[in-house]
Structures are given as structure tokens and as C-alpha cells.
Image (cartoon, rainbow, N blue to C red):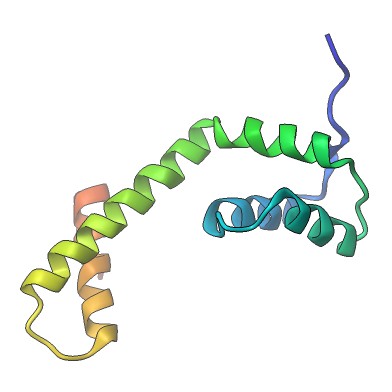
Length: 109
């Protein structure tokens, strides 16, 4: 069995930001993530970074993020079809309250 990746020992804030960038900005390439990580002061090979991110994309947390993103999009679709207001902020607030209801069974306070 291979050794543990040194990427697993990144500080929590760097790891969280890296994963946030990976999941929330799917258009970024491995080179983009590699450059960002180097800018933060952490040098790793592109292949180890790729393996690390692929492993994280198959984790339960990643599945939950993906599911939440899909639910949010559907709630925005529903909200836009029934919302009578004219401001974008109101539409987004309505959509988020739908998301909260669907995901957690309660409305936002």
C-alpha cells in the first residue's frame, strides 16, 4: 500500500478553500488549483493533487454538496415560476426558504 498523501496534512483552512474552489468552480483546471496551492506556499505534484481531489470528489461530503447544489437549482426554478416580485434578492430569498424547507423540513427564520 502506498504512503499517505502529504496533501492530507494541509492546514484545515487551506484544505477547505481548495475543496471549495474545486467543488464551486468546476471550470478550474488542475493547473489552476496547482498554481493556487503554490501561491499559498504548498508545493505538490499535479498528479498527487489530482488523486487527492478525485478522492475527495467521491467522499460523502462531496455527494452532499452535489445533492445540495441540485436541490438549490430546482428550488430556484420553482421559485422563479411562482415568485411575483420584481427584485432578484427577493427571488433568491424565496428560493433559499424553499431549499431550507425541502432539505431540512423547516423554513428560515
